[in-house]
Length: 366
Image 1 (tube, one colour):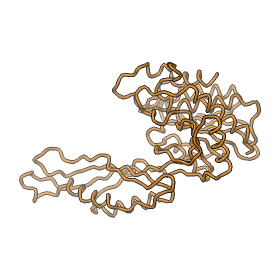
Image 2 (cartoon, rainbow, N blue to C red):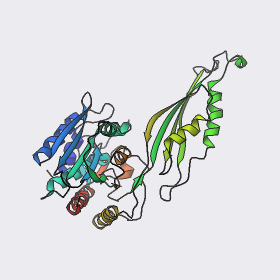
Image 3 (cartoon, helix red, strand yellow):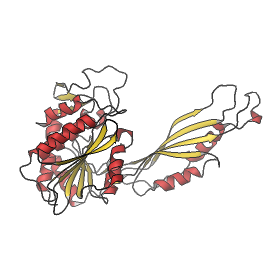
Image 4 (cartoon, rainbow, N blue to C red):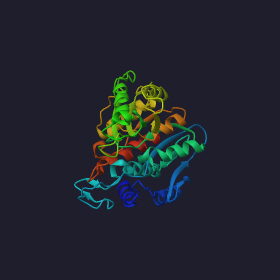
């Protein structure tokens, strides 16, 4: 099955998360890979959901690893030009939810591995996950269970238009709860206003120094995402909830960020981590990364200057779990098309990705 057909087949599975329902597509991939000589293990993730670990030729040395997720985000409210799960090709673009993010990338590394005549030293390992879109749930389950294959380098097939990218920022999403005392709105002195408590704390939080900037990623950032407080105009609100979106860079400890924010809160306020995923960065001068960067540039015309992605990936879980192996984010999808209406991947990019991945496998020496 070529990469175009395979991408269309993967898109045909509705894996919108929630609820995900990735099991059927994982079983389809497992059958395909088993026929290609892979040992496949399905790891349950809940009702109708699972992850897939597929390996071939493990032995001496370490495998070259590939990872990608098969859940997608919802379609949104706007109408689509083509049915979202039909995989229609028009003007060199393959349309469908998940085409860019990131079923096209998964199809490309599966196709590349199945095209190989010989398995490289150390073998091939694929970690195909469920639930990435809601915070790398599947990757975290695989890491917590242990028993990951011995992997020497990791390719994350998220959308980069086939540019080799050495890392991305981390994500720390927090929920803050402020507690007050309700009273009649005409007598606010008899209550404690939870919204006011939150407002004063947020001014302190926005003034925090989050850490030093990274030479490529830039500075860490903080965004106040949501704030909800009060039930009606003429009552003093006794509860206010706020969510924060912090994006970290290498060298910044999330526990330290949480402690700094906690110090800005009233004693009875609560703080809860919703997503806690560290930044990922591999030195671009690392020989393996330098090699795949140059090869991808030759095949796709991509730039070789180091850059970082703004989104997070399952590498936030897998890279540290694999003892911080060299990691590259490199996939055929268009970064600007992820999560959009009329999402598409360029057919040419899919073919380029297969060539890049196949070349990386052919050069791999464990």
